[in-house]
Image (cartoon, rainbow, N blue to C red; front, side, top):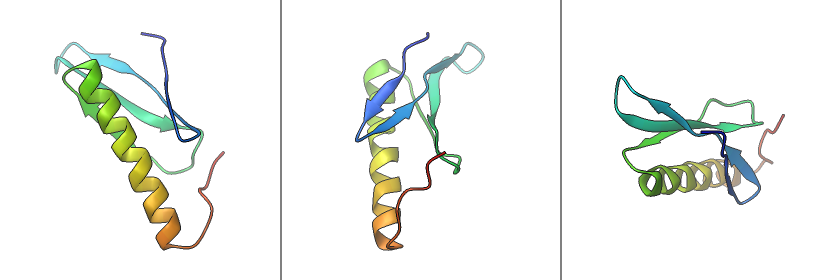
Length: 69
């Protein structure tokens, strides 16, 4: 899969683990390591959006801008 996820200005990767039979990814272009996973493409996208929302919430609470690379 070469597709990437997009949401709220963030980009996420999509990978497949045959060993675990699941999809997973991580937020790209930020310094923090933020990952997500799901059994289906829909579940992966929902987990990705939740991860982005968590990053945005954390940044708002810390009163700073997201640390993007």
